[in-house]
Length: 143
Image 1 (cartoon, rainbow, N blue to C red):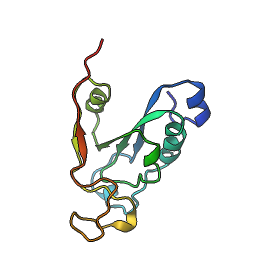
Image 2 (image 1 turned 120 degrees about the vertical axis):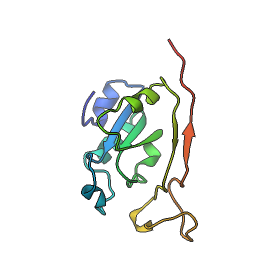
Image 3 (image 1 turned 60 degrees about the vertical axis):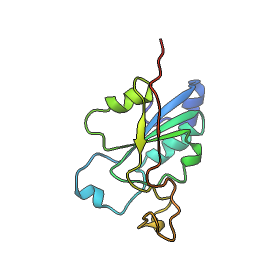
């Protein structure tokens, strides 16, 4: 474990995969009204360092879609955990296969801020992930 791993740490530790958690600080109301829709530092550099070196799942903590398009090609999987509150056990349970994973986007995930506002049916509708995008998996039964 390292809060801000660099590529050398990841490669020298010989990890098979990584779970990278990045995103916004938790909030209610005012902070979510910001027009800054980027992942706060050090999130982008962690994604670049870790996901460029090993297979990775990126868990995004945010109250709204944030800009991830510059990094999405390096990610093997993305979990939009939104603002999960004080307990992350539910997210951990599905990541490690204790329960099946079901998730569908309740809103469109844009590529770039200059695409906003973006709604299904708009002439310029070209999202990174469309409204309703998601997956359903079964629990992994193991030893």
